[in-house]
Image 1 (cartoon, rainbow, N blue to C red):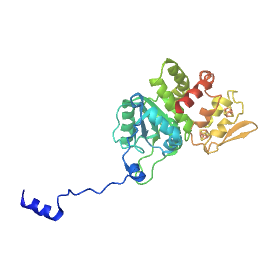
Image 2 (cartoon, rainbow, N blue to C red; image 1 turned 30 degrees about the horizontal axis):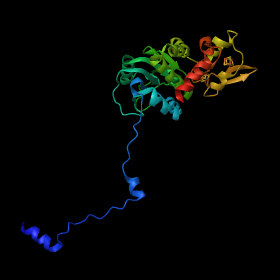
Image 3 (spheres, rainbow, N blue to C red; image 1 turned 60 degrees about the vertical axis):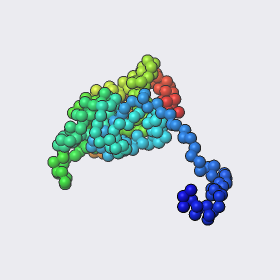
Image 4 (cartoon, rainbow, N blue to C red; image 1 turned 90 degrees about the vertical axis):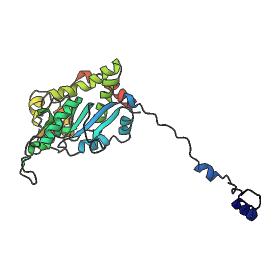
Length: 295
Ligand code: SF4
Ligand code: SF4
């Protein structure tokens, strides 16, 4: 037995030092780490969506966010957001199922032109979200001459530079429109045959809108609806105009052209513009599918 052991024995006796007894209380029990409940996510089946921000005001993205809890449901179950500068820290664009593009493109800004072309190369489906991406909207009125880049004077809708598959018009588009397109795109790419059929019925008019060109104005109502004897005076155009450029006079829309910002919302909302029986007759099934998906 060594010297230190002897000294220890002499000072403390043979008794082994006792640890203070731990009194179990409810509080101590509560502090114990509890087994974590693993979150279940159907990640593998999600579609990859990139949100591309061009010359837009972020209002379209805010409208997307205005889906509140439904946005989380969409992101949890259906959509993997693979790029979106405002929300996630992904600096480089990767291949994706769908690119949702907000804003028009300034053709004097080489980076923007390159980015929209890259978007087309990387995305299976390109969606123009909002009046600026679809029709130029307020950026149609840009004339340049402002510091610190006076040369930035020409802004064009993305469809003037790349092929666009689908339009979601509006300034800003409604949260429901964006939500519906996300769910329907998921059903189109991941659903069974019946769901694909339903999604096609929903998305076809929006695809046709994209094939209809990149110019819009309140005058579309005059030339394509009123002058064709189609207007029924419902007032949907007036209700949808974000700048109150349309007033109903004697039961027909009157357009204040100097107020019009060329967003295309009025024509898109008019039930006599691209009236589509395929979607009207399936309205309940579409409504049920979207509500069911987001429950
Ligand atoms: S009249 Fe109103 S809704 Fe129609 S394009 Fe002009 S700003 Fe948009
Ligand atoms: S939405 Fe179409 S049908 Fe209705 S009032 Fe306007 S132009 Fe006429």
